[in-house]
Length: 118
Image 1: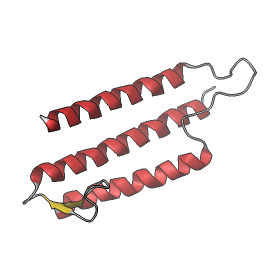
Image 2: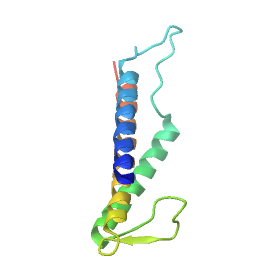
Image 3: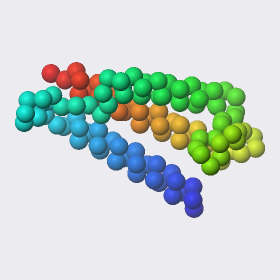
């Protein structure tokens, strides 16, 4: 039951993130004061998001290649989940990392669309 709640909340949060991005894309290119509409992240945040997403993507590829993943979170720091011994915890951590990469990639996409609109 806990897993169902966890995955449902991930889907709900992903849907809310998508809706927020679409709301930002529907805004006018300039506000009432003539200032350009800001993206989800600024230039420094954009570069940091690329770096974090790249690190998470590397962790996903490494986890899939090796069959083990370090725990993502504070409560289980230092633990390593293997596919053979802890399949559900392994896939939960991999899915969470995939979700983070997709969320960051969507934020970068929305930001680029806002920056380069005409």
